[in-house]
Length: 280
Image 1 (cartoon, rainbow, N blue to C red):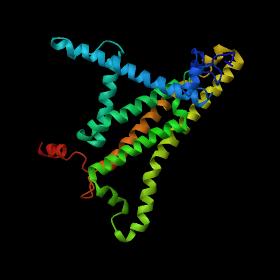
Image 2: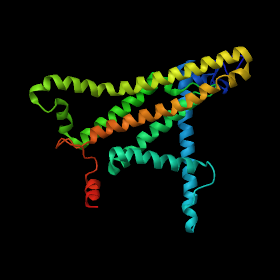
Image 3: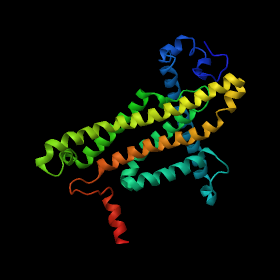
Image 4: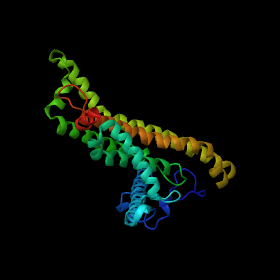
């Protein structure tokens, strides 16, 4: 049953799609659950949005590369997909490179940048009436947290070998019985802290906005549902971007800690780069 006012809580635009809201296609795709199902739909929609913008940006870049002369270096006019993605990639790559070094940044940048774009898009969709943010789902966020957990542990083992395990016992063998459980707990708790932080903040933000929207709808109908929550949209916009940034930044930090050179007890992410800078 679709609410009379389409911006009321519980409504989603996916309900209007043929076969999704009231048909077998929705059940086949796992969208029959009125809560989690619409969150899954938003997650897929966010993925297609990110991939679509990335594809348009790549097409714009290919057109520029095919241009003769200096015109290939001139950016598009306005907020084109190419311009937006170039600004994002350059700024975010500088951040990741500063934490991981140039060599490791080439490996892990696609993952953390992809997480940022997916989380930010899902968060922002949650501000729009008729969308449930995928990042409000604990299981969705836990899946991302576990992915980061597997990646940074694999990175640590592949870069440092047994030294990655050895560092969990601490610098003194005598205290290993105490330090190892603490370090191990700290290691396994990371995906859950990523998950809980993101889920709690987005759930609270969406709850506030949707509650104010419902109050506006009760008072002024659709006009109230659109206008009353505007101040909360502004605050929610910054919260959405901030939470995406925090998740991606912490993920990069975890990779940085895992890929640090542990054979000599010091951090050396990009040995060759540092030597090159030293010579300069």
